[in-house]
Amino acid sequence: MVEFDLAGMLKGLRSLDVEECRAALEDSRELLMAGWADRRLLQALIPLTEAEDDQVRKDASWCIGKLALMKIGDPRSVERLIALTTDRDDEVRANAAWALGELAGQQIGDTDSIEALNILLTDPDKETRGMAAWALGRMADKMRVTSPSSVPILEIMLQDKSEYLRKGAEWSLERIRRLHPL
Image 1 (cartoon, rainbow, N blue to C red):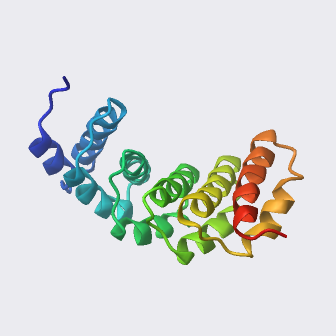
Image 2: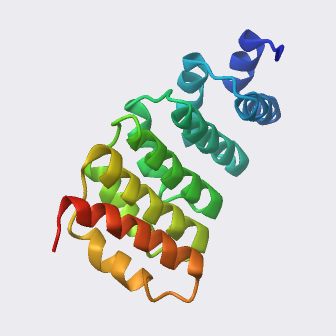
């Protein structure tokens, strides 16, 4: 059994001291990787997506995605994650795409999510592009929503030299085409 001080962790996540907040986020990551989850954690993480500190935004977006994977999501996080798709940090953008895809598994997301993910399909970072492709396929598969504007961008990705990106685009297109056969 994992022992921890939830109240102390939540206090750390709400702290204005960056180092204290980073430490609480590291504890949160460890607990989530161990399989522990709590809705109160999500509510403390959502505001951290607007933090000045890159590492805080990276960890907060990752934790929100991990909680969504564990079936704890909140529609209020979508707007914040969409904002993170334009973050200056590659990992933050990739985490935001992943978290949006995980939220789709709980029927949380919207057309604004799709448009933000479409933009990420042309991101300079390969990992971010791959996560965006996966998230678009996940939205089509789990929520049965898509946008015709995703298809041409994903089709271009099928020609990418990266096998990772080609396979991600193929996976996503398969799910989109199940909804809208040619």
